Length: 267
Image 1 (tube, rainbow, N blue to C red):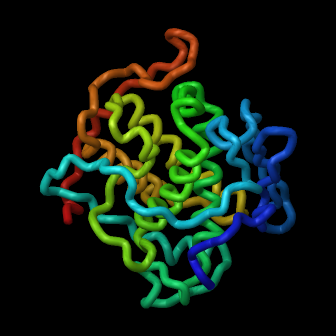
Image 2 (cartoon, rainbow, N blue to C red; image 1 turned 180 degrees about the horizontal axis):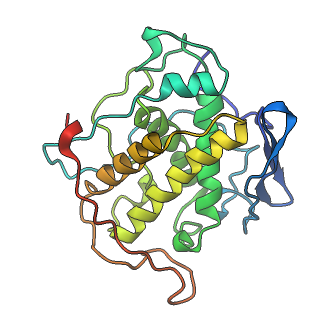
């Protein structure tokens, strides 16, 4: 199956409800044995992702390229994780074997339209509803900027977990910032919040699908890798302030991450 997805399924085969009345919602999902597992439900102001006109019906997902340059060119580059075969199994899409363990090709399980898509969707829900990124909306971002961002997130997710789309080149970098904002400087609070939100979206996607949660060690590895990548973003300003916040003053503060970098996985 081609990984150049031409459209987003009208409803994911798991538990994510479609776009209704101008908001995304993640409803309760049926876990193993038919038991309900509670998940978040968030109303998003604006018609679609990042308050744009981009909805699930209008977005035609296509794995994006590396439109941003979120690396300061230091010698150490963190290696990707190796969780793709685990996600393939947990999401029930088959086993591609050794040939698909570290790359995504048309002959591999359909990751883009399953766990990749669901992680990106849950992350988009969270960012859209978070006042710390409230200005990530028109006119700062156009509808095309939003489409590019979602597609770049698809590519980043495959790469981050260790199975980039065939033909991907270059190093793994912090891919959670819209490429349209490449010229802006971000604070440590911005980057830490994005990293935390993405890690939470991974856990939410597993919950949505009824898959078992990751172990504490696996979640810790995800968090450490995201923090390591965040520390490579050039021009970062050490501050607890959020650059694009629309939150009331004093209502959204975050202590910047001070965890020492782990250089044991340098590439």
